[in-house]
Amino acid sequence: MSATGGPSSPSRRAELVANLAAVRQRIERACAASGRSPDELTVVVVSKKFPVSDLRLLADLGVTDIGENRDQEAGPKVRELRDPGAGTGSGPGEGRGTGSDLAPPPLTVHFVGQLQTNKAGSVVGYADVIHAVDRPRLVTALETAAARARRRPKVLVQVSLDGPGRGGVRPAEAPALASQIATSAHLELSGVMGVAPLGGDPDAAFARLRTVAHGIQEQFEGATWISAGMSGDLEAAISNAATHLRVGTAILGSRPSLR
Ligand SMILES: *Cc1c(COP(=O)(O)O)cnc(C)c1O
Image (tube, rainbow, N blue to C red; front, side, top):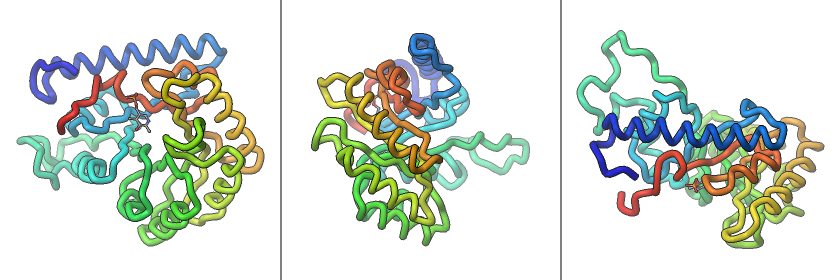
């Protein structure tokens, strides 16, 4: 992270422009290497621990999808982003109501973190996509919350690619969980998500995820998404049919340890 300037300083903007361009170039190269088109990929910029000012800059630079991993942080940030007039942190002239302001472009909000059942109600209130769904009780809680909120979030089955540790259902259990989601009236089964094992081979891990994804797609044709790949392994994800990349550090810099 750059230490220069304030949160929305010109230098921060320039840094984000350069980082976005570098990531786009990596995506283009990886796509060329596997005969894919970059149009097939959505970059979810994981903005955890970074301020709302960065999210505004990213939206201004054409980013359409953002990801968060903790409800306590994500809820207030998304509320401030979507309704700047209601928050406390907005500066003069940033609120709504001048009449000439263009509406901010709609941002798709992805919840990418491990989700506790008792946070389902809160997360369903603002997340458009929930990535890490990995157990029947969580599906039940999300369905109840979504029905109550009259929402219908997209949901991905998190598949464990490294045994226990980083969450996810075992590959053999993924189809049953997908089926439970698909039959939940207020949840839209959109596909699968995986996190490569720390220190392992991301290519082998994402190849396993692809196999699980295709098995689920045979039964549920709408389940076309494969959320895989982060800053360090997005090339391996692209060569294994990923549709969504979750990129934090490579775009925003190292996460601040203090918030
Ligand atoms: C933080 C996070 C990311 C982004 O990781 P980077 O290595 O910073 O790109 C992706 N996925 C999940 C689930 C995360 O929590």
